[in-house]
Image 1 (spheres, rainbow, N blue to C red):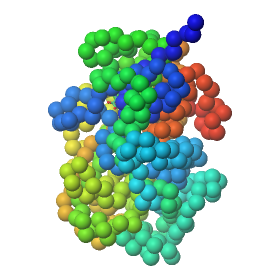
Image 2: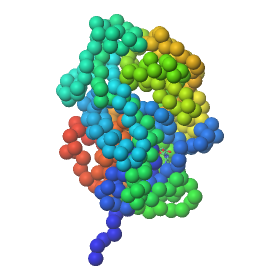
Image 3: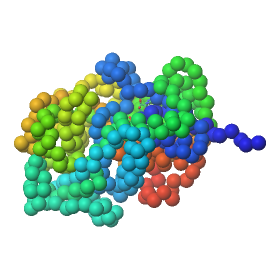
Length: 391
Ligand SMILES: Cc1cc2nc3c(=O)[nH]c(=O)nc-3n(C[C@H](O)[C@H](O)[C@H](O)COP(=O)(O)OP(=O)(O)OC[C@H]3O[C@@H](n4cnc5c(N)ncnc54)[C@H](O)[C@@H]3O)c2cc1C
């Protein structure tokens, strides 16, 4: 007699959880994927929210760290298959660029991404003061900027990528429960309707909520930050002028930390927006009440003005039709890498995007599935061990 298939429940239908569920179904186990849909009206929703409710996330092989580059390189290689199978457009290969100062406080960031590009042999163009103005005429970088541009980067639609992963899991017979989990104890969890679901293994992939909601037996060491995003609307002609614009991570002259900028992307309201974000310090979120209040808001208008000032400095000719802000949360781990680890015999943790987890979610989901299945990931070609650290 054959034994029944193991049952693994994944809590969190976000980027990592959906990818993990897909990889688990491919491993042949019985999978239940539990989590709410994206809120229809964020201003009235009482949670949980997700950090992927947007139309653009930068993707790139270039990175300040070799493991982050490996994670994204492996994920990027699988976007085309995900698009083919799901029928969703996920990836726009408009190019990806990282730029920073050659000297001063931000120089370590610049030398780190240039070194990773060399060590991992990422095909890229190098640029400096001599070549940047002609190659990227719409940008005005500070003197002394060094940049690397890769054709293999660009942006993903995080909603489409998450949907594709979830769709593939569902097609492979994963059961999907569209509710938040309100209680969790060793292999048993309670969705909002009060039913109890039992599984041999539970994967907690709830993003920032792994830190704030108290469902885990121990709190992982994470810093969850309230982050503001600024959107600058452009018209069709301006978007056409910027047709070659890459996604960009850069350090402006006045800062010692990096900002991110995405080229014009069409949003569900039919309009085209450039999106800029990045903050060194912002308010910390420590519980679900704070998370809900923040996600219901439009972010900080003061920070929005600051981000738009950086955008105007970088792109002085940009014709902005209107601007608005949005709210999001990023979760940083104490190791700087995602936590992909067993918390107990029946509980796996998969979280900690460190502001960079969207593009790599497929590979993170694959590693999460391996850990949930009891497999060793130390031979997967990473320097990091992805072990969880508790607060
Ligand atoms: C403004 C901003 C810009 C970013 N830019 C980039 C970028 O350019 N490139 C990049 O790669 N990354 C970027 N990131 C990071 C990236 O979006 C995150 O790393 C990624 O979304 C993390 O995926 P996740 O699955 O861990 O969490 P999430 O995507 O937040 O998903 C978590 C899911 O868990 C669910 N959940 C929570 N609690 C429960 C519960 N109790 N029961 C059931 N479900 C629950 C939520 O509803 C949600 O669907 C950005 C993040 C932000 C905020």
